[in-house]
Length: 266
Ligand SMILES: *[C@@H]1O[C@H](CO)[C@@H](O)[C@H](O)[C@H]1NC(C)=O
Image 1 (cartoon, helix red, strand yellow):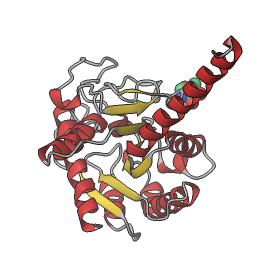
Image 2 (cartoon, helix red, strand yellow):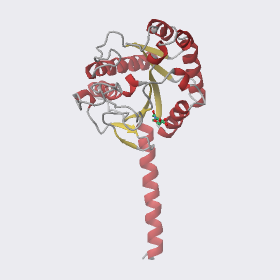
Image 3 (cartoon, protein in one colour):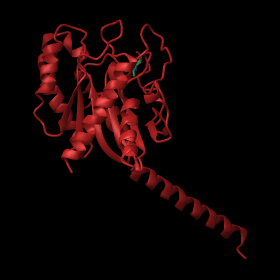
């Protein structure tokens, strides 16, 4: 017979082993994506005029296979609006993150593969210029902290930003250089020199230099930078934000881009 003290010790050890195993499994299987940028990444689908209409298409529904890292750095089942506790000063709606994750799950299931758990790390904040995302800024350091806290396999950073850099010519002209620096810094600070970055080319802008920013996005001269073009997708009445259906479409395009990149690297 074990003494109560020995039994307690044994149970404590057992619990430790179980927790460690569960954590490791969770980490090993989770495919992690950082979602960063400004409002169209944070999601404004159905959320114009300070209210979200609450419409969640099937491609955006919660699933036990899709998790999100909360503002408090806890993994939880992801649901719309994905950025609600991150982009806290704005009304968030549907963004591209959930439909992106669903498209990946669909792809895996269609091939009878056990779908991986997908871990989304929302980081986007509305109305932010790329300058506000440079190394040393609160946004940049927050993104790096969250990506590190996520653990798992960091699969890609998905970046949708630049509308705020279309107002001043000097911002638009500096965009390409700032984006390249951001990608280099991020890869260095995350210890992932090959890290895939998928950028969304702007569908809209806040100013008249959208073309210049799009041109900069198209001509990033770094390896492992993919490009998905949102131009032409339906916009809300503000002519700035993608509609819910447009975000569903964008999510699918992002998944195609990611999967294409995986295939061409195998
Ligand atoms: C929200 O607003 C507060 C007060 O202006 C500011 O300090 C904070 O950085 C903002 N947070 C985000 C995520 O925009």
